[in-house]
Every structure is written in structure tokens, then in C-alpha cells.
Length: 357
Image (cartoon, rainbow, N blue to C red; front, side, top):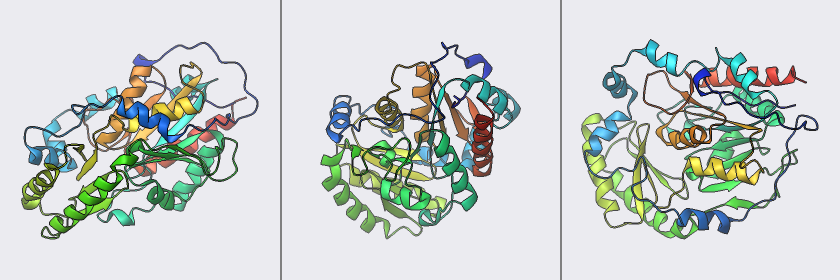
């Protein structure tokens, strides 16, 4: 039997025990086509969505994405924060207990979760030990990588074809491409709700790349359905100029929106589709929508992961785990300090699952 991860004590939800499942595995799902999620995304357009940078100081938002600034700004007692968001490692037994008899579905961010945050985004490789941990998780539970990176790029980093991949903040979803117990059709694209934005994304990419050449350390990354403007290697004195350049370019593209991550500005289509929508889409595709016997676990480190944490909290099922060394506002129930702890958590979860009948 697979397990199903847990809420903190105050968030615990009592569910009717599910019927016994055969073995440890999960059923495959009938792949949904791109037009299904595209229609849903366009039907929920919302330019005022959470996290969109509109009025106010973009520079303040950029500073808030820096752990150094965030730590000072928070000023919160770390022990108090840890009481509200305890270590998922220390509470692993509670997680396993809450997951008992339920189907865990694992969702993992990449940067800062499976790999450390590095200055060069192209060098964010994961260790073999982490890859082994993720591979083991995928053998027990349906597992998806949900990243702001392009799907092809994150697949190249992870190198595990038995997983589901949701790239571009969930705007490019595809199932496993190798034989597995939860395999979709190998060549079936499950969800691409923003295909009509590809030409404009490419146009903005070329414009921004040229503009950023004047700012040392700036880098524009093309993630197919969205763009990332990295300023981790930019002197803080240049942040304001960088932000103004980005906003000036976007003034000519009202169908794009600007959000922020960890020392990165994200440019995305103005459709209502994010990591939370990707989580819901995959759960529905797997046949778990509306079921009380499923326990999603989402682990991520970035502001963009909050969309998925909020979905889980609203569902009243599963848990969100924030990867951070600093106290900060989050909807996640638990925390882990760094990728090394994520690896340990995944290993212990699999070990605990193996001891259950």
C-alpha cells in the first residue's frame, strides 16, 4: 500500500479509509489533450492574480526576493515560525501516520529544492544521491517535477523519464516517456495552455536579451512559455535600472504579466495558470479529483510554489513543504532547510512506505 502525507496537527483532516489497492502502484490515466487545459486557463484570465507585480516599487519587490533582505524584513522569531511550520523530517512519523491508507502523489520543484541555488542557472545540477532518492520515490508514488524552467531543460537536469514534468510554471505538462506503472502515452502532451503566446514570448526574449547586455551579470532565460530575468549576479546598485528596463519592454505587451521569484523576474502569459493549476490538472488526470483517499505532497522553495501550497490548503488534503533557512510568510504546513534535507525526507518517506502493509 502507498502512504499519504500529513498536515501539521492543527491542519489534520480525517478521511474515510480508502478501499484496498493492489500492490504499491497507482493507475495510469487517460491523457488529456492540450486544448482541455488551454480552454480552462483562458476561461480564468485574471490579471490581478496573486504575485503579479503591478503598482508600487519593483525595486522593493526585487529586494524582498533576496534572502538577506527577507531575513531583515521578517524580523520574526525563528522559533515561533518553526512552531507553525515544523520540520517535515522531525515530523516524519506524523506525516506517515496521516498518509496511512492513502495514495501519495509527489510534486517537486527543482531549483532550490532538488538542486542548490547557484549563480549560473545552467549549472544547477542535482547530485546522483538526489537522483536516486527521486527515482525511488517515483517507484512508489506518482511523481511530478513542477518547475519554472522549460520542460526539456528540467528533464535534462533530472534525467528520469519515468516522471511527470510540468515546465514553464505548469504551462507545459507531459507524462512519463518510459515504461512505468503510471505511464501515459509516450508521445502525448498533456497540457500546453499558452501555445498562442509562443511568438510574443520569443519576441520579448530577443528584445530583453539585447537590453540586458548593458547590465553586467543580467541573464535572460527562455523557458519556452515564460521568460526568467536573473539578477543574482547583478550588483544591487543596478537592480533598479534592470527592473525599469524590464517594465519598459513589457509596456508594449499587455498580454504578459510580471512576477518575481528568488532573485529572478518572471514574465508569463496573462492567463490564470500557475503551479497550483498544474497540481490540480495532474490530480484530475490521475483520477484523484474529489477523492478523499489521495494525499498530495508538494515541496518547493519559491514564491511561485505558494500557488500550489494554497491549492492544497484549500483542498484540505496533503501538505505543502517550504524549503528555506529563513522565516517567511508561507501557506506551507511544514519546512525543510535545504535540498539535503529534501533528499533525507524523500528517503525516509520511501522507507516508511516499505514497512507498511
